[in-house]
Image 1: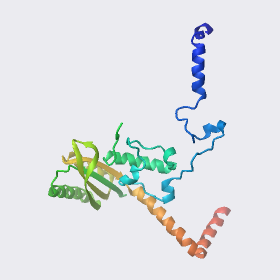
Image 2: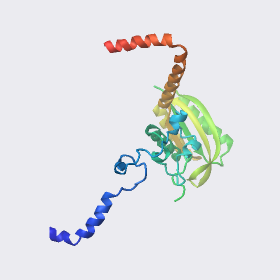
Image 3: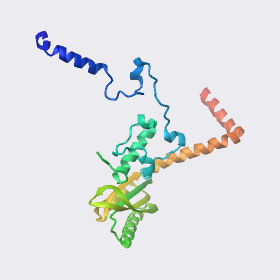
Image 4: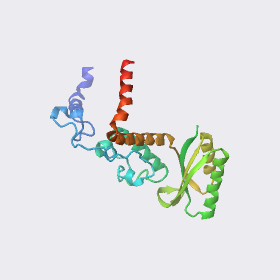
Length: 112
Length: 135
């Protein structure tokens, strides 16, 4: 077993080590609890949920202007860590966007 | 037992007004024959579609709010599927959402009334709380 792994050992180990130690995928600031070692703050910017602040209760698939604020140029739904929307509103927002896409009020894919 | 549904459908843009009226009246008759009620018919006009649907770039949007059973909606959808000028439709059930919104509005109204009239509302609330604690 040792003989088999000897050749791939040094090369494999170094690449494996760097991969596992560095932040995975989105190592962006405000990544939350994972950044505890560096002494970063828990949430970088105090972004508030637009719906909670303005007390918008109903997120309808019909108001395209409101929904369009949470959709990227490519037509993708923007994740809530970027918009600061709270979880229940994000869920309702995403169902509304999907309904709007079905009825051709919003595109499935804009560009790229 | 009657649920409220919102039925939005898109009709091809080169459709004549009277044909559209005929289609809407057919749908309304389906609703009334299934002992439902048509709450409103809203023509949202011609809009540009976000993507090409059956080689059309624009379409006339119509919103139909009805009250009825699921079987009635099934029949309505079947008719829309068969009708040639209708290129897309979407049915959404809205009575649960409406109930939730009404509840929020009622709570808001009560909350506004509470600072002006604390005495009458505090008594039954206090009695209720103590009763809950003892029970």
